[in-house]
Amino acid sequence: MSKLWGGRFTKQTDSFTDHFHSSISFDQRMYKEDITGSIAHAGMLGKQGIIPECDAKLIQKTLKEILSDIESGKIDFDEKAEDIHMNIETILISRIGDVGKRLHTGRSRNDQVALDIRMYVKEQIKDIEKLVLNLQKVLNNIARKNTDTILPGYTHLQRAQPITLAHHVLAYVEMLKRDYDRLECTYMHTNVMPLGSGALAATTYPLDREYVCRELGFESITLNSLDGVSDRDFCIELLNSLSILMMHLSRFCEEIILWSSHEFKFVELDDAYSTGSSIMPQKKNPDMAELIRGKTGRVYGYLMGLLTTMKGLPLAYNKDMQEDKEGVFAAIDTVKMCLPVFTSMVDTMTVRKDSMLSAAKGGFTNATDAADWLVKKGVPFRDAHAIIGQLVLYCINNNTNLDDLSLEEYRAISPVFDKTVYDAIRVEKCVDARNIVGGPSKEYTSKLIELNDSYIKSLEN
View: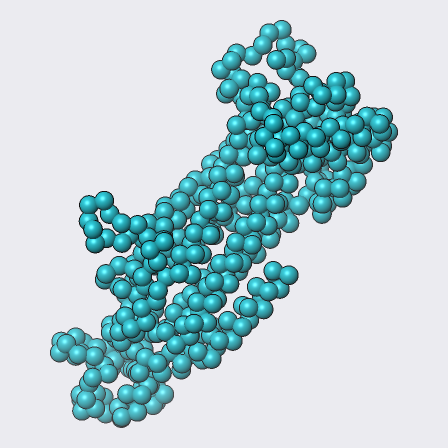
């Protein structure tokens, strides 16, 4: 087939060049955006008198028919037509002849692809935001059921202080709130209409860019044609937002992998989200969590790949920028696959409350509260820290816990101790005594759960 740009060429491109140069294998997923943008562009050309209005209407009508034929599987795209833009235009011309050749008036593939990818990314962001909100809702419900479920909090993966499962899970809700905000910010930067930038220097035709902007549901138009065709910041922002989101999922997956092990026994994953071993019949593996953890690296790679592609490009458009779409598409696909699986996995897992409580009562997680008790009795904190350190060492040497020491053993280290220390170091008291904003107490946690409910509902509406 002859190329639509082939006027100055004396021979056809090499067949391997066609394959190497073509992007239709991956950018065909933007067919709807390409056709929608072309329909708006054609309408504007007719309204402005740049092409006859009857031609504009015929182009729009035919483009809608092509869209319908694509969605019903009646059209096969041609690699020799290079990309989705040239495929659609070639099909259009084959159906209405010279009238179809008027469509590309006043635009370039450079601003056309910039428009298509922005339209595609906008829609995908909204889809991902819904998945993020759904996960927040599930985690908030898990928290609601576990405001009394005590487990150890960790630093350095060492038992540190007692908290509740609600408090732990709500930490991830906070992360997901930030993920949602980042996606919203990316959406705002994506929601700018570049069509009319031309190849790099706009056009001499009297385009009504604001009309196209309104027709396509954009917030504003780009104000510099060089930037309009060469900007891929919004793609990089999206990949960054998705990378951080995947990092949050991966951190939680790592904890679930640990928690579901025989060593922790904090949770048991539902059979629907676990797999077995081909040789060891007893195994129940957290493969879904491991896969999500592994796929996080892929999304990081797409971010670094696009940053590297863009870092040395002079203005304006360069063919290197064709490399933006595969990574963006793959990252979107990965996140949209991981989020529902992760959400269902945590929603169906069984919480082993007894194991969590038993772990919280071991490892001296109440040591800080014992030190705080001394401080409230007038002992300077550094002295209190040293006293409790000595008590912990005594417990280790005698294979016992702070809870099980006699008052005489306490007083042997410091005469300040009295029997009220026992109530202060109960893990339940340790948790509920931390009743400030951000703390793990049941009272505060319950308030935060209600606030989260309101926040999620406001975004859903």
